[in-house]
Length: 102
Figure (tube, rainbow, N blue to C red):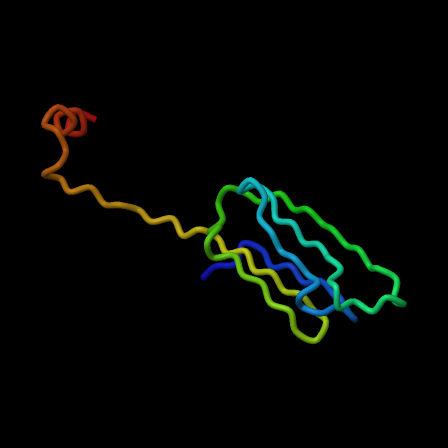
């Protein structure tokens, strides 16, 4: 898998449940924090939101995220483009004549 880009953010003091990674309209990657009912009431709410525009050449299904030791890692893989070879028997006769003339 080729990584188009990898995002690393330091989010100390947050629990995994408080971090949301979302795709919006197949165009934007959004990373945000969200307070949960288990957040301590005496602790001020820490809010964070970043929105990244995604290029067209990425694999949407392959996007993954992990949170370990206060560091959020988001991996956005590049879509693997495959080339299809054309079987010469599938080429119409008129195109074969043009190719020979060139």
